Amino acid sequence: MITDTEIKVTGFQILAKKMGNVDAERFIALIQREPFDYTKWHQNIDDDLTIEELSFKAMKLRKSQQKVPVDS
Image 1 (cartoon, rainbow, N blue to C red):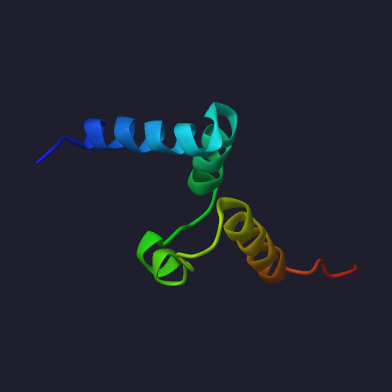
Image 2: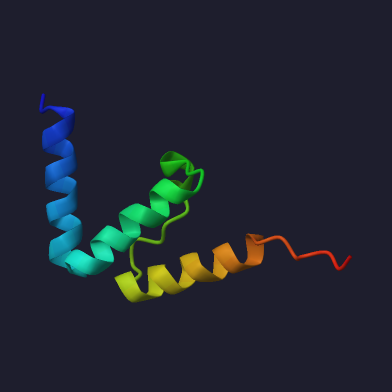
């Protein structure tokens, strides 16, 4: 069994390799900023999507879940 630190380092390395350092850091910042249930999220992923398609799908979902401001 590997340590939590090793998991974090390996995870970041995988993200950075696939997305680049800047986008990997942005991804982590986004995840930390809002409540997130990884298990629920992962169940809804389409494995055949490219990273770009998955990102677009996530942005579309996020936009649909944003609250509409109420005029005062």
